[in-house]
Image (cartoon, rainbow, N blue to C red; front, side, top):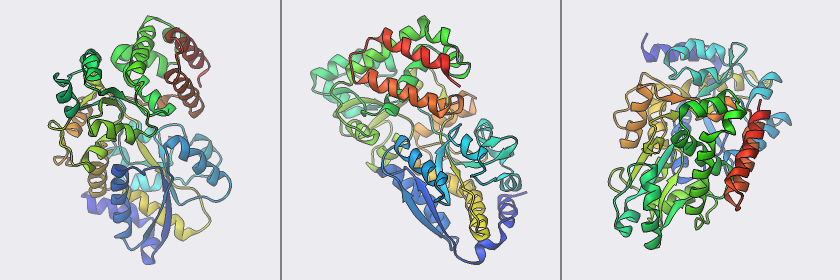
Length: 408
């Protein structure tokens, strides 16, 4: 069955929606330059069907937007569709019967056959029913490096995290901040996770994050992690920005040597018309462990009483995972597509690296898929305290192990 036939089959179940234009409010937190360019691909595709995308962008990070989104749904003022991350963030809303069951759309579209890795669709599934459409794969384990900064410092661009740390004194001597870091807990937690994979390795990471093994969290592998994060904290002392894209801009402008950030940073480099390999370099797994987590974004559709809206919601769900939309959106976003059957030849060098790792099976679940939202928040709060203070690494490790011991 070709794609057109599949899409017709998938949208046949939403028969009435194309008969008259339907406005759908879609909430998300994609507000940086690169993110706005990407989300416009979704909006343009939906508007091209004769319907209307009503953009409900919420300024700030997911940590700011998610409580607003959840509050609206619980308060009886739901949007038609909303971005959340892959994982466990929507469990309670699903259990309360507040999110639309998309199983019929998924079965008609053959999502089980095309979503790769399959764990992404598993994250949308509860009690055998599918409640969201995954739209991208975002990985957090990337080190972004400014060629201009290293030219100022007169040293070679590093090829891994260890070389970066060794290059920091030269950067500082040249008046360049070694590490750009936004002053928000989720960014600091992302950096912690990326350093953990590089320093402790996969086995220790899995034991702690997936199996909730607090003894390993208290052990020597994680002692090395917290000492490495404490060192990174010192390299970021002069980074006085808040938002992640402001930190990315420090790398783009050469005022910082590097940033630990997810692959969505590529969208900012693209908007700035910078070229991978010439203006900046990207190191998945920090150049040490070529492994990517399979985090990312999915769209959920709150239940409503209007059959026309429900039909349109299902039509939009089918559209978001269609091949053409997957290509256009992810090329703009810098993320990887969730479909394993589309041509991404136009992807840049960083995306090609990620696609290669994905093809080789070098993936692991994201923290959002393994830890509850409450546990994630506790860790983010700890990281915010650790990065913004002189808290000893040993104290931070002990607090972290206690959180893992209580994790659900």
